[in-house]
Image 1 (cartoon, rainbow, N blue to C red):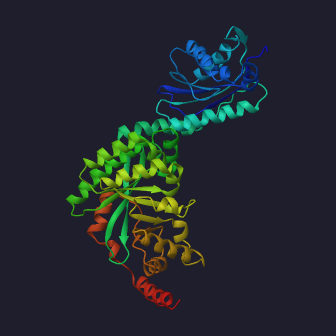
Image 2 (image 1 turned 30 degrees about the horizontal axis):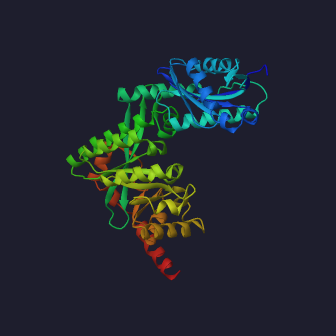
Length: 427
């Protein structure tokens, strides 16, 4: 054999050019089957140790470890992302010379795949990308390198600006109240982040949260949100309103032990009633870690709410294990509540299910008096939506509660309630 490199494939994860880079490379003996037939199983089973030793000599600064019968992982940091190309080339060159196996020289063909990410990149995501790269390498007939940027250039620029915005005080929290449907009391509010960009104006979360997740800024951004919500809760108490404030938690963070520890410490020392909203799909992503960490939150008094219920692949097996006290029905079902034949049945069954699991139900996206009336008849506990209030800044929220604007229920709502109540009882 005169060719060492069987295949190679490179996948680049998003990174921030201002920080160090992490590289995760997988090296596999592509001709392992042929070598095992010649050497025998016993000798072939330790071939990976010989390969790992050669890679340690080639990359003395790397963490090299054998993770399978014919697979080796390399982890190393660097200053520039292009180093991954050089690193993979060096790995290929390392196996151009045969290995001495019990006095016989054998050439090992390799397949190689790698991924690069910022120093704080998600380790699981980095490993998955390297595995995908290796899988593509096995399928190719010649060396292949391919650069995939998880974020386009403008998004990477936005990520850099967002990192600075946290320090510059450009972020602010708006609040959307949750109103108890029968008592007409504001019981809590959801904190929704906004970015007051110095040149772009107000940027809504839909335009930068995904960027924050991909650029691995979501950890820092969420801790800032929790800290600010705690401070705002104190201002609310000083104004005579002791409310629980809910913060949205990304699915990425539910398996991040460092984040969980920081969040628990922050809330534990914060003297504020805080809740966390998590989507059902984020739980299903890694149920073991998610359930364990949500329980840690619940154990210190953080109220857990399941957000956007019904929008994903709902799993009752997971739902019954969650220490959740609230279930939020996705607005997809609420906005069509009075114009669809099926949505009322889905919403009613969801309310009954949540109550059976000892959870309160929040309907989000309520925009009409008819929907409010029907939800109240169905036994929905809390209402959230533009009919009550759009998300507003803290000072405006305090004024909203001081003036009891949420109690100004028009006569049309009462008429709708009475009519729907009679119809529902007959049905």
